[in-house]
Length: 410
Image: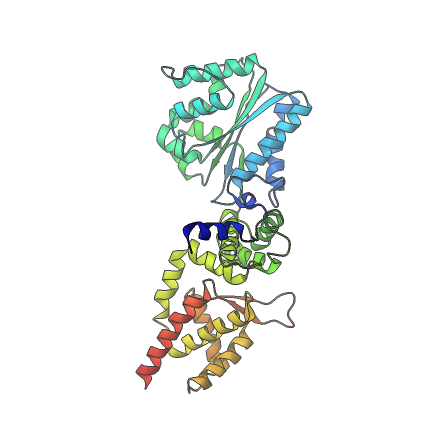
C-alpha cells in the first residue's frame, strides 16, 4: 500500500471520537464536578471586586498536587467572575500566567501588560516602570484585573523574595491608590514558601484553599462529563470509566490525578481507533496504561521471574478469564476454576483454596494484579481481580516462565 493510501485510509476511518479537544489539557469545562466548594471560597474572597471595587487587593493561594483541579478551577472562576462583573457594569479582566515559562519579574509584568493590550516598548523599561504603566492603564480605563500565577514555585525559586514582595504588595508603596490588581497563586505545596521572609509568607498564606486528590467516584463523574462531550454515544461504557477511575482514584491506591485519568481515556480512544474498533474496551485502557506507565510494565516483568510455578499458573488463569470475558475484573472463584483446569492440562496437582488465596495476595503485594471486594451487581461478597497492563504480552511472558519451570521440574 502506498504512503498516500495508508494516510488516506486512516483519515477516512470511522472514529469513536466526536470532539477530541474536550480531552485536551487546555480545555476548560462549563462546570467542575467536586470543585464547587473551591469556586464558592474563591467567590467569597474576591467578592469585594464586585461589591466595593477598588477597596482591597485580594491574594488567594491554591495548594494541591498535580491534577487535582487547581488550574482549571482558577480558569473557570476567572471566566465566571468576569461575566458577573460585566452584568454589574464593572470592567474586569482575567490574566493567567504560567511561571514555568515566565519565571522572572520582568517576564511576568510583561505578560500582564500584554494580556491587557498595552502596546508599549518594553525594552529599556524596568519591571517597576512597566508595572506603573500597567496600574495607570487600569486607572485610565477603569479596569480591574485578577492575575493567576500558576506554578508559582518556579517564580519564587528564580526571582526570589524581593520580586514576590513587589508583586503581591505593590499597594504598600501606593496606599492611597485604588486597589485594582488581585492575585491567585497556585503551587503544589507550602514548602517553597519557606524561602520567603516571614512578612511576605504570612501575607501570601492569609487565604489558602487546599485541593485534595480525587477519589475514584469523583474521577468517574469527571470522566463521565468528558466522555459525553468527547465520544460518540455508546462507544465508551460506564465500566470503562469506572476502571480508569479506580486506577487513578486516591482511595484505591492511585494519585487522585484527574489529568492523568483523562489522558488515559484519550489514549484508550486513540488505540481503539488505531485498531479499528467501534468501542473503547477495557483492554484498550490496559494498553494505554502500558504506554503512559512504561515503568509499571518493566516492574511487573521483572517481578514475574521471582514467582513460583503455581503463582504463574494462577496469574495465567486470571489473564485467560479476563481475555475471554473482556471485562475489567474476574471473580476469584472463576480464576481458581480456570487455575484447576490449567493444572490438569499441565499434569500438576492443584493447590488448596487457602494456598491459592495466598498466591493472589502475594501477586497483589508485588503490584502484578489489583484486587477489590465486590459491591453492587454481585451476589454476596467476593474478591475481584484485575490486571493493570496489556494482557497479550503479559501472558506471553508468563507462558515462557511456566515452560521454563516445567522443564526444570522434569
